[in-house]
Image 1 (spheres, one colour):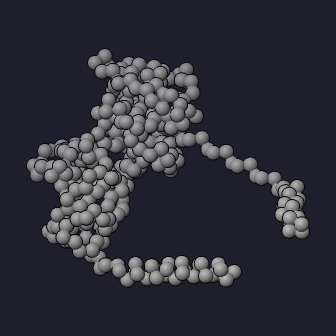
Image 2: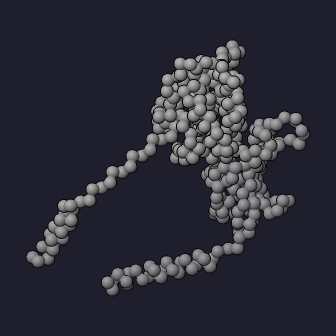
Image 3: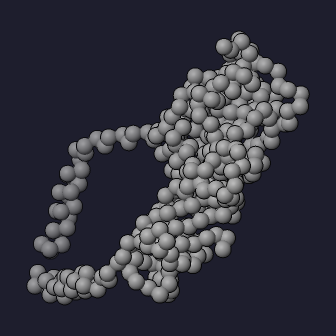
Length: 144
Length: 196
């Protein structure tokens, strides 16, 4: 019995110490919105739910994503919501279904970094650019 | 010697405990996958009256595949006997989900006269099952993992609905899908004779 305690005690202490260190090392995070505009020019009604088409099919509702720092470390992760179809051209074409892009927006909380990248469903990561025109956001346009 | 007997005694006690085992409950049989062979239609009703397909209609791309339970499937075998509605969908598709329950009900109302067939493109089999059960889909569903069927019908995004006449004429396609009342009306206009 004494031997068991002797063996377990350092492990228990190490575990407790480890938890404390992790908690103390957490950084301040700021809320922001990751916005991705998929310029697939698909024919849809503006405003409907959408997913990327053609080479951008991996952009869709429930697709896993990660926000990465410049070193590739994950800062936030989650699943994309459905996209929203936005008209590709300002002109009124007089039809219900028109050329559209598919825009995704998802809220995240990330620590301050010099730059960010977005990985969706394990595909090559995209550069995210800060944009504050509609509140704090990190945006990407594909194809860029 | 006494120490050597101890394991024997323990083993005997354990075996004694096993002499009156509790009968293990039979594991419940796994439910048949939704969208599998059990969802294939029965015989065509003898009184099914159909409109002739326009002679100008192109032939629908014939395709084969596997249903959710692995059953081989050939679309042309179905439309040789009756009209077919193809429902292209994904389990994650919110627009598909919003109209699916009504489409499932419409498919039940036309059972054996007009057969609905789901075509799930590049999806997870377990998530497709969750979707089919959640929306009471009781028609056959083909898993189109490589999206070859999707491409042959130029489907770029779910949902999409395609109507094929008996004999294989491609009558109409609706990218973006359509709701059940509209599809019902189009079925009466395009394929079903003697329908109000």
